Length: 430
Image (cartoon, rainbow, N blue to C red; front, side, top):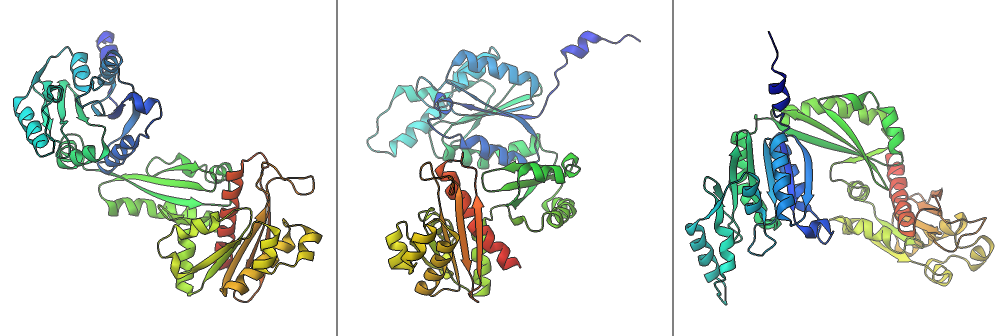
């Protein structure tokens, strides 16, 4: 039996869902593309894979060509942007052109737009607004309760559907929830969901993490993906299942193994932060904390006060940047500063004791260092930071850190804050 090779090579192999964001302002970086992220999260809830996110400017020819290409490789295309009344709102007509289809006015939509506008003062009928009423003949309209530009659900060819939304996030989200969610669930979802749980680690690098769990990184369901930022490494565990409860059961043994492997490095999950974990622990202990900051200039205090409920444990802090204020506000002896320098283990220890006594707290953290880009020397290079933590029993823990001097000032400050918080976390754990 002969194989029809021509048929095999011409057959379209589809890959699921694509997200297309339209707008020159996105390409220029004038606005951040939050829509694509939000839609991706919604697709995960529906258990749908998507393999591409594309951004394109307001150019009709390029947009038509791109939509045509997407139709050859994906089952479902979701677009945001380009549905308004202005000349650069080209989405609907460009999509129609990609499939050699005409667009026609929907008079009922025009009446709805005029009604919406009549509720605003002053009311001016602008015929350019009628541009938003034109759609392919067989397109289903997605109502826009919050704006004048509707979207559409259109199947221009077999096995390919397009959903269009305006670029305004509030409008897009309401339209998704009222119309798109149920349509996609009914027509594209197999009833499964994607569920993710993220473990957060600090005090360890991404390369070390990946090497330690290289066997786990090869799992297919659940999958584990590491992500690194300046202060932490995230391990996102994702599974596809029929329900959240089933997904949690699949993830449970993986989480257990990871927590045993990185027992001292994992500090929280999902939206938790070092500071939120510490606030929760100090509330549980009914203990208070204060800070004495030099090189971090109040950043440590800013981190902890970003947590709701931090007022129950955080009494305040002293930003003692100058030697004069270290002496007058924190009782750091002048001869100590003269002998060892402001950036020293001895001065950091004295700052911690001073702020604890002055503000009458259970815990105190002090930090002094050289954040750069100036001020370093051979004996005290840029990135040298001293941290001191004084506890309820007045025992003092002293930490010396030497960060890469090639890091910028903000990075050294953030790393210093992270090590202040993580050092206290490890003390509380022990």
